[in-house]
Length: 143
Image (cartoon, rainbow, N blue to C red; front, top):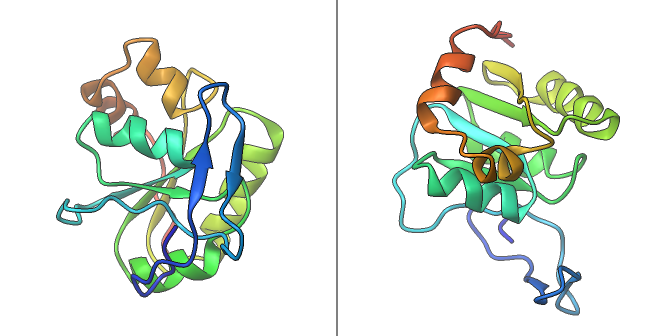
């Protein structure tokens, strides 16, 4: 996990049964794609598996540690870059997306998918073209 300045601040692990934990001494941070040039917009999702799902579609996807959290790191990392906040389709996900949009100082759009989250969308054969089509119908909030 990374902070907003590009420093590793934690390591999260997951076993083959889905249990996850952080290495002792880790702090919550962002799951940022390595070796990929930043793209616009940045796609902000909840968790490492949603970030991996976005990367599988070729999106510059940054994962937050949970529905809330990571705001200060994202604020530093993104600056004024446009960001699509992909909200998990549940109350914590929607509330977290709204809170994040309110604190970022960049143009944001909240996208709610016809699936629980981006990972489920990709598993249901969702495509980048579908996301691009949905993104054309959202309202962008300017800071």
